[in-house]
Length: 188
Image (cartoon, rainbow, N blue to C red):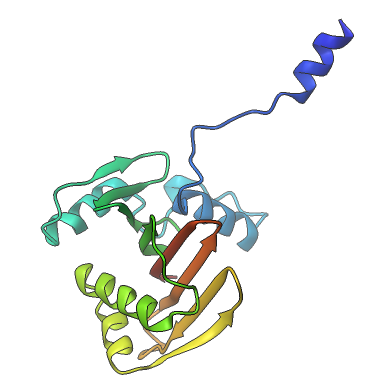
């Protein structure tokens, strides 16, 4: 009986959610609880449209991107790019976000190769019509604000601080052999 009790106490609950990328719904839920723990905000009190699948699918259709897989556990579309994968999402409840994240496989570029990473960000900005990113990169209006062995982050200038649109910048993350780069923005 003691052995059975020890085994049941040491088992971990596993979820079907993958650690592949950012889960917008989880981030939004965390933001809600941190912003106002006394509030009874629920899914029906959303300020924005949180139909991630519908919004993301429409966004991809506008971009003529038809080949993707929808991952409902991540609330993201996965797009194969040769050996690499793009994770794309649009929507939100309290914050309405746009995310484009590139997961690189077998890439040999160093985290300090800013030219390569900025050019990759520019390619994604063009492909996903994130015009402000494209404009700021082309104008050189970016700043490296974090730089270490596993993470580099570039801020971009905001051309209109009153429009309630915030730019998270360009983030490059190395985790062992895995390399990720993301650009994202959100309405608050």
